[in-house]
Length: 432
Image (tube, rainbow, N blue to C red; front, side):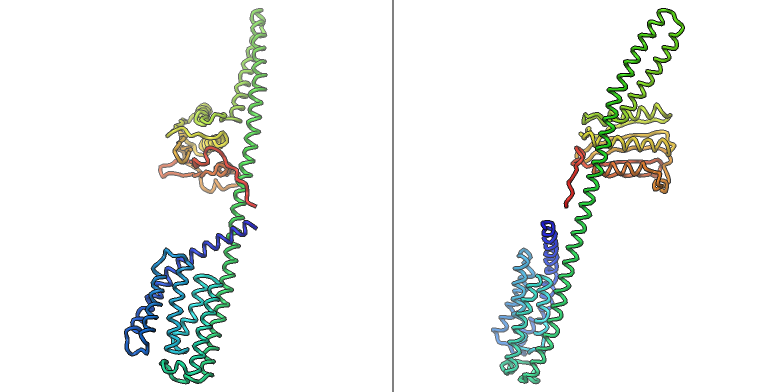
């Protein structure tokens, strides 16, 4: 229920802001339209208006101008001042020109304006005021009390004529008010449902990202555990075996036995196994718990790429060293590793540059190669998981992954992580 109230309050704030902007346009336009009419009515001697009515008309118009000018007032205050002035002018028009004149048009439009600019309650309240003014003018006209001041003298004292005018006026006002009220209610429901659906989508996206981050975290923890077991378990056992093999080989060699060469060969094989096991352990856990371990890990990645291929690979660090959590540093390392491997496999490049730039607001990783790049269609094939995984990791860090192909050739893979989220991966709880 609290979320529904939040959505309703949000919609009410949006509608209130829209009404304020609409009032800033509607009231000045009405004031400009009514200014020539007011000037003619106040200063023209042919109008049957006493100075009291002229002063009242001018005062009503000044209230409309004040509502248009004083934008610092609240929405309700401006609406109150405007409608008091507008209803005063409409009442004077009904008294002077009768119910067949322009006064009844104002009494018809003002409730609709109140409904649109203020709300349903204000609109129906304004409709009630219009009915009272129109009814009073109808009774006075039917009794002949307004006959001397009316410009229209036809049937001015015939009650049936004025009752017909009143019925026609109500037949126009009531359906319009009902239609606008229903439309406003339907529009409000649609806006509430749209905002509620948007919040549900946002909550689903946040929950999906949280689950993605949790899956990646569990996967990385498993990799670290396997790497630790390899480093502290298998590597140590192989090292102990190598030492024992070396000791046995030394004894055999001192005796001059022909088996010493075979023992040395076994020792060399053990050394190769130890190196492979250390490389596997370091590959499973390339970034240490040290917050500044990303740059050394990227340098080791460059050295391994140079050892395994004939291309040149260089790592450069720009700006200050970014302080990253092990999780974020690990994601950035994996993105650099995947981008570099893609460049080696598909781009036929001769050089790869890895740049790590730390700034006050963000941390940016770039992998730049001078190869031929890949066709855009190849990236969308089902087997091309590399880019999808890099996007997956970038989203888990709330970062942005970009793949650019300069005109001079090559490919630039960049991942920018906001500094506010670079220190740690946030796992927001979804809104239910």
